[in-house]
Length: 252
Image 1: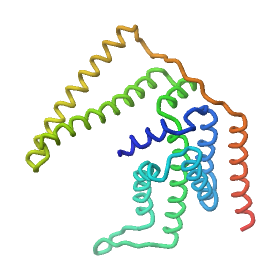
Image 2: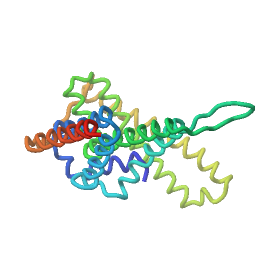
Image 3: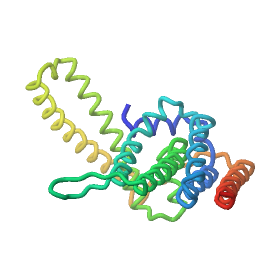
Image 4: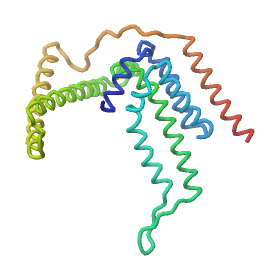
């Protein structure tokens, strides 16, 4: 399963999907801010641990799906950390050096980046994109920007679905039996996909125009659970996290 699909499926299946975006946002953004502001050890490590517990616990992502969701960001982080840990120079040829200072910087970068990524996933894995766009509208983000983001999101998943259908049909006709057939099938799939997307965009434009669409298309928002206890618990957790990190630095 692709990274984007795994993330979207996790968000729609999460029990926290019914929770208010305000409650989840305070917790997730609080963890994200702590990961960026607190020392990597112990602050960043604690944020990463708390985020993993939340993801596999109450958010119910599951270890298998969590791996599919985070592997791409982890690879990106690993590449960035490697460039920090290894110094590249030129002296009668390329030279590579690893210094203690570079390793410390790379370690801090890895912990902080991973913690921030996991903290952000506590929101992404419990909130579908449609709910996030609704929250942006409440924050007075201009409607045209939200509508463009919504259309891109919907078209992306429609595109993925069409690609899968075309691929399965071609495989059933031995379209990838050898390299030549694979190249021919790929080119045909791209042309068919382009025509389908063009036609879908045309039908969408006609449909919206028929409904008097001008700048935004409002829909009814389903009720969400707003919990004062959840909000207070999140603030207490963040306060304990910050206090523990500060005391750690003082007592060292």
